Length: 341
Ligand SMILES: *Cc1c(COP(=O)(O)O)cnc(C)c1O
Image 1: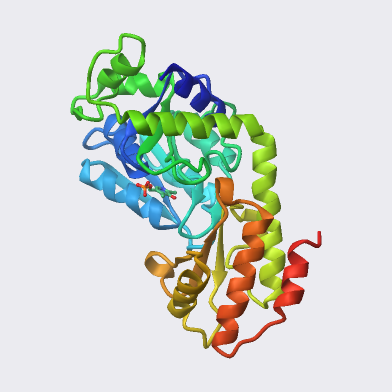
Image 2: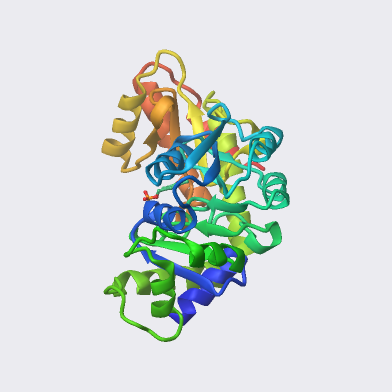
């Protein structure tokens, strides 16, 4: 337990004592942090530019928060000025936003929004489910107060745990809250993880061993090397897609390396392409979520999978699937482009 906590601190870029995996998937991480940091009536500003921002709005609303949504078009990042205006619109308890929006493939720049929130005295929470282990999250350097993640994205561990971390400012709020949860009671959980080992719930022991192994692998590779590998695989994917005549949905300046959204060309049955990839090539790519349904494919290059061999396979398979629908491209040239940088 101790080594999992210290390895989690390394990937989160934090010294926070309160750093531990919650028993549950990434959404349990989201719910646990929100239920600990939000009291009914609290003003909570949430950036929404994808499905996971919408999920945070759902949780905060159920908790009785006074929710202020700041929206950006799906496929674009949040505008810091708009976030700043919303934060300044009243005493704000919490500002919440998603770092890597897995539904759109946008990597949200954080520093300006975090600074505006902290200047206004609000706590800041970031969803790092898809970014952790695949891109720097550097919580302490940014000044993020609370964050959560999941194991099955860029840490390449089976799903089932949600790493969370809170700094002292956030823990001060937790200590004062009036409406605690039981399973997600961070005070009780810190007695379990924090040395006393006071029984709270039965830890999913095999999952914790799995997370420990994944963290050792990530840190053994070296975080900078790992992040560079994600960027290299993404760049290779962009070249291959271009070679097939396909367009990325998100502007190059804000693309998340670990999740690429690809615009579905006119005249293509997108679900049939996914069925072909899965049935004939044993590759699963995602369809669009929420309002993006039918408009994009989502190609994940996360953790172990973020390497050029995966890119070569998915480009070859996509080329095949498009040809099967009468939109043949020069697959050989696209494969050469993958490795030509
Ligand atoms: C996957 C994901 C979640 C939810 O995690 P689950 O493990 O599916 O519960 C939340 N936020 C983001 C950005 C995600 O990618």
